[in-house]
Amino acid sequence: MDMQQVEAFLAVADELHFGRAAERLVLSRPRVSKLIASLEREVGGALFSRTSRRVRLTPLGTRFRQQLRPGYNQMQAALADARAAATQASGVLRIGFTVTTGGQALTRLVTAFASAHPDCQVSLTEVGIGDPYAPLRRDEIDVLVNWLAVDEPDLTAGPVIDRCDRALAVAAGHPLAASRQVTAEDLGDLEMARIPPSLPAALSDALLPPRTPSGRPTRRIHQVQGLHHTLALVASGRIVHPTVASLPLAHRADITLIPITGLPPLPLGLIWCTAHENARIRALAQTTVPLPSR
Image (tube, helix red, strand yellow):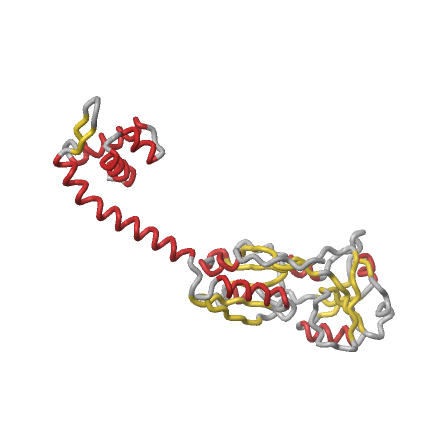
């Protein structure tokens, strides 16, 4: 006995009319008749008496309905409860971010999520900038807020929560420091950091373009160990560093940020392990946060 047979029997038992039962089930009348006939063969007796004018339950059909209905209702209730649990955001949502992505966009997102899901606690964790996906894969965080340059088969790139304009970090005494802007083509003439190999290539290339718009290779030659090391080399005048205009510099007077033209804004958004997706992650991804006007 399958579920279609059960639902067809209960619908006909309720309606005492094959046509109305078919409409209720969104099935054809012949299909409902076929389901009832197959169920009666399985039971071994007639569940309905049929004439050209009316349909009635037989005594066997009445007994079968009385025994079947409570179990069916219980199953439907269990299914509804399971569906609700699958979509309910409760427990702890672990959000990771890097030193460059833990700004106002993250604050807006967490505030909106907490308002919409008061039963879900949010835990914030800073992750290393050199290998930001590792905590996701180790199941140490549920979601990473990071730049959406993702080319990893096991990761899902979710919605954008901000778009950040590009800027070039240079030493305060650098010849470009007084410039109102630089172009993406200018990057071919300047020495930059060489990103650690632990950083995925797609993300590395989005942050530090390997080529200028005309195709010239950029000079990614100075090995760095992290953002603070990078900024120390910038401040000393040894390199420049393409970044975002929102880079937190804590009011450093020895570094200047210059707008870059010719590079699109970097999209900031949510990333998670596809295999680890849960109701909390889905609820966060569905949280609506208006992007700031530019």
